Length: 169
Image (cartoon, rainbow, N blue to C red; front, side):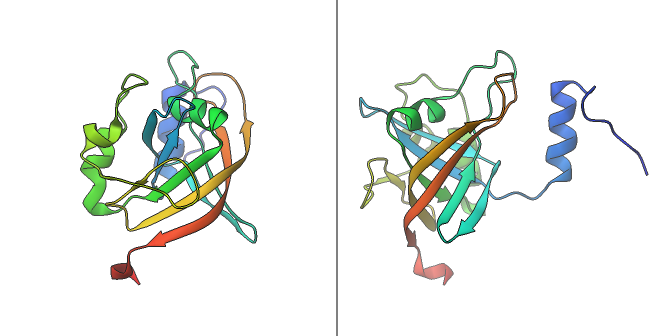
């Protein structure tokens, strides 16, 4: 068995070793909105359910590896502490990948990826019509793990309601 010490590895090697070891991971397609009404849609593989009473999910928009800046999703949840977690399914993979590209702040990732916006019932960010599960959440806390490139920024969110396509029940 090979032993790998994580600390001395480059950022890319750390990412590769850890992401390939901890797989498969569910993909959260997070929809957020800023105070001006600009919507952002971005996928996160650092995501999961952490409590069901209260119902809490966590996802992590990591700081960019090249310059440690934060992503639009993190900026938006600071502005408007709400998020829709749309669960990504196989038939959405290509569109989800398109939403992961770095677009300018005012770009509409729904349009770029070919997704359809649905109004949420309790919060401001829209849902993704094509997702079979959509969770409307309020952000409880953002916990920064560090300010270096690749550092996780944990978005801890309470699920207020779910929309579930009956075809998967």
